[in-house]
Image (cartoon, rainbow over all chains, first blue to last red; front, side, top):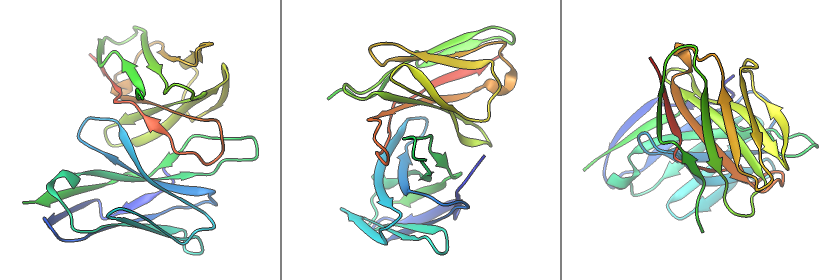
Length: 114
Length: 113
């Protein structure tokens, strides 16, 4: 079953603009991760934010996490044509027994117009 | 460092047949995960293997099964194929350490005719 819901489902912006994607989830989590998928390819891990963190940066990426609202956002600054892809949030709700499968949202399809 | 590799890239089968998909994790990774990405259904967790054992499975029928070999590579077997099994099957690996990101292969595109 899907845990996360990304918003918007699709986003088209001009190169150089910032892109913001949101993700909501339903259950308690240990961490939330963002992945990118280029058409028909595998997923590339972008960033992981733990449940006790509120904000994290990696290059042009900024992720926030609000556990009280069960939501996260991914901001891509100064977008480039190469950022065109689908972006997924995934929640990791591992139990004390160790790692578990990730639960993915349905993704945001981002198009960067040159 | 070589990434996660999956084979074959594409696989075409007919209803009722069996399919075998293969995955080699990143060297040193002990956990392997399988996901199904079907049109309209998104990414769904299938199976998790670690140290040769099945640790967890998603909400899929028993005809989806697999195994992990001593070298940590893994196979996913799908028996009695149905049209709705057409999907991209993705394999991921990580160290079996809670909270580690998963590293994905490029997937096997399974088409059922």
